[in-house]
Amino acid sequence: MASVQDGFRVQVRVIQALTTRELMTRFGRQNIGFLWIMVEPLLFAGLVGLVWSFLRGPEAYGLSVLAFVVTGYVPLTFLRHSFGRSASIFVANSALLYHRQIKVFDFILVRVLIEAIGTMMAFVFAAIVLIFFDLFPVPQNVGSLLAGWAIYAFFVFSICTILAPLSEVSEVVEKLVPISVYISIPFSGVFNLASWTPPNIREALMWSPMVSGMELMRYGVFGDVITPYYDVSKALGISLVCLLAGLILCRRVRRMMSVQ
Amino acid sequence: MIDCRNIHMDYRNGSLTKHVLRGVDFTINPRDRIGLLGRNGAGKSTLIRLIGGVEIPTQGKVVRKMTCSWPLGFTGGFQGSLTGYDNARFIARIYNKPYEQMRGFVEDFTELGTSLRMPVKIYSSGMRARLAFALSLAIEFDCYLIDEVIMVGDKNFQDKCKAEFFEKRSDRALLLASHSVDLVQQYCNRAIVLHDGEAQIIDDVHEAVSLYNAL
Image 1 (spheres, rainbow over the protein chains, first blue to last red):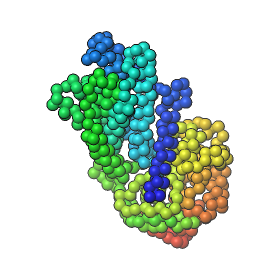
Image 2: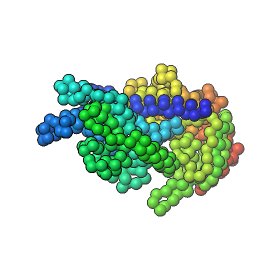
Image 3: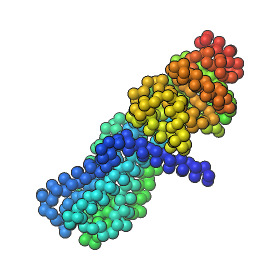
Image 4: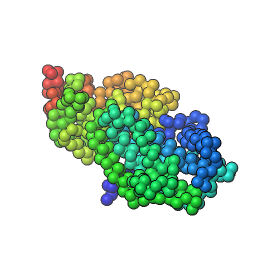
């Protein structure tokens, strides 16, 4: 038991050190540094939200279009960045594998963690600004907002643990990683609520943990105006299976890796 | 003690497989000074990387019962885009050593001055070797894995290495891959000669050197 605890403590230290290092190499110490991570999701969600508001009017299905787009797009940029950054992540960091306590799994965890924190900051920032201008509802249920976000992030992370090792062994997968983002959009619950879809499709959408996460997040923001559909045990079950597959793949690929 | 048990290592490229090591067995005891001899491509660096846990053997096992440095060589261990200080801070964190103390030692040992504020990617191999040695000495391992790299240093660096490794830390174990027969003869008590994927462990260093010279 003691050795498990020691191992855990070592991993916590490694993850802290890697996070600091990643922030420094990616954003540097100049100008706004880490805050850059918020800029892209904000611009993206903000501009798409504005375009939608112009095209469809400020409200649809009784919801503010801008708020709907922001709640959908901010998590989507997290997904896109996390998938994109998983490609070739092992080779890119291989100089650090000289230190035995650093595991390839840590690389994935740290990148997804940084993206998740940046996304959360962007979300909070956007919400505060929009609430101030009365374009965004005050979140009705913060608990379900956080629960939905946790489910969403956990699933994205589990998929990253699969994409990262596969992208090392197969150039085809490496090239296909950007496409995986587009494939996942219809299953991500960004553009619609499950309650807008026919019951048979709704049933099928429950197989996507992202839909469950997204529905919970939107329920957390909009409250009883919408009827959320989610299946937490299915979402967590699927994510755990993906994570297990990912861990096995990581281990196998690590054994085959030649480190320069 | 570090135990290498029946280590095999293959590298594959498409249909071509290169067997670099075919069953290497030996033990590094505390205080052992082992010279690792072999021609270019014999598998010296590969063996050191496997013992350091950087790569994982195709077959067989490395059992580490004492702490063991990362392979100190020309590459690896550093993040090129970060400065010397930042790399030192990173390594202090992951090895759980107080950074302040490490910083002092690194400044002292490397004598790199303001270069420590520059990214490591612009360092020469000699400067890199200084930084790697300083960091690993500050961490205090039981066993040091050294891949060639002492020889890239200038006289001042070589003297420092000798003082730190062979005088101050004579209680530590050392695995030293080198083409410098003199260095091995002078400081090692045992030697391994790698040839054709097989390792011969020889207790008499002079005998090992003549075997190596005959290859």
